[in-house]
Length: 590
Image (cartoon, rainbow, N blue to C red; front, side, top):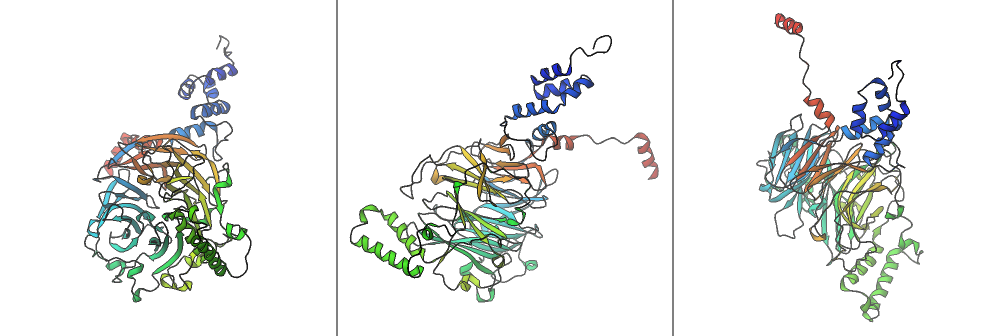
């Protein structure tokens, strides 16, 4: 100011100068005087700082819950869990998966060391319990999930066996006394399994029909099912529970109504159902964050009345009769030599399987009005590589194990269940996760080359090293946003493994094979942080009660806890020292 107190620089000029500074310099300049501080908090200034610093596209609006551009800049800078606060080294081999309890007080980890570890999530994380699954002939543990009231833990593992073995098992562990309550066969093991209700879980089984044709059966199991019918309170300790296995083939007559077949689905071209999860439809109309549709609707195919078979027009006679007639004509053509030169052995098997299933497949449901939950899983139709997401509605009468055992009430086993929706990602799916409101499905996929054609189901197209993180709206069945990118993977099709991702209210995180975990903002579609490990990062998980806490699990046999800069400052802030008079007064009262 001059001698008369008049500012030498007008606010407009100070504003232009501040525009050329970085965020830290703007904040520092704002400490000089009140006038500069007022300019340094200008909304238009921080709008420019935001778009420039975070490299957000200018057509992307501010987050709907944001109150100002300055506060929004600070949110992305200060609340992302990117500060390493603790490293857990209790596992002795690769850590494959992490899962939080719904309360956020506990989490579980699975590892190649064949243990399931349960941890207490205090300010300093500590180990509560370690369950060794080797006495049950497990090779390693791979997945876990807490039930809705956090009283039970589902743990999934892989059996010891030959290299190409696909058998696994699901164990249910009580979190009151860490007793093993039941075990259920699970095939293939990468079905993983999941909870449908607080006391019932979904497992899988696989039946080979031909060289590249099979049938996947999804079962609903009671969590407390044990062969000896031991009540939960009297269940033996996990350390000495006998290795009795409860699964559909072992159900005895006294165990009626504890196992129920949900769906029976035909697999073609060496594909199988894997990675089952359940989405709750009740919150679709009130999502935490509403994402605008921005992707092409062509990825999703509704398999209802517009299916290819029905679109061709109704033929005379019942469907089974038409199928048999079509199959007879097709086989007659083969015998006459008219079709033999056009089909390989695998293509012939697939064609015959398709014809046999046409009249034996229950059509999909036409309306989602009655659906309470959606069953979601990876599948395929062209190759063994999982390139599609299958979706089946779960209706109210299917939500309980009460009813006919082993699907006997279905009348006949001579039919399959058709999928309600199919999402084809044209690539190898290596991870899936639901938003907290269950409306949005996030998918890690490694894309096939554009225009690639699968000629042999045993030789899928090569897959990209760059991982695409795709987003689908389960209410509209449309792809939304653009793919999130930054993370990478390097293994080929036949060695691909699952990389678990997780979604919080504002962020989405994923592991990667490039030794980093990644965090993106869900609204702005930008990468906010890279979290370093010494090897592949297999799994990430946010605390459901505090999205500023993230855990990462790696092949380096460690689990790392990450907190936001804001929470680190809060936890490290010195506690206020009591006033001397108050200290003296308190000592006199003793």
